[in-house]
Each structure stands twice: as C-alpha cells, then as structure tokens.
Image (cartoon, rainbow, N blue to C red; front, side, top):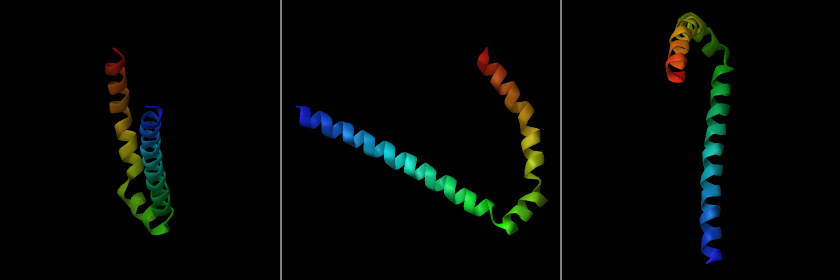
Length: 68
C-alpha cells in the first residue's frame, strides 16, 4: 500500500512543478515582450499607466466590501 500512496504523492508534486514551471515561463515571456522598446513605446501611447490609476479606486472599494 505504501507504494501506491507514494506514487500518488509524486503525481501531485509533478503537477505542482508543471504548474509553477508554466507560470515562470509566462512571467519570463511577458518580461521579454515588455523589454522590447517598440512595445514600450506602443504601451506609452495607449496610456496603460492612466488605466491602472483609474482602476485603483475600484480595487480599494472591492477590498473594503470584501473585508465586511
């Protein structure tokens, strides 16, 4: 019985490792894309910073409602 329990545990570890590896690849790819000067210039024209500043009050309101 110990062999089957150990195998299941290793399967869960493998799934977690795949998930974290995928998240790391997504983060790395995003960093590569955002480090491109053309992409930075394009995002600067879109005003992504202004969009984030507009979303902060909504986020604060959501967090207050969630804390209730």
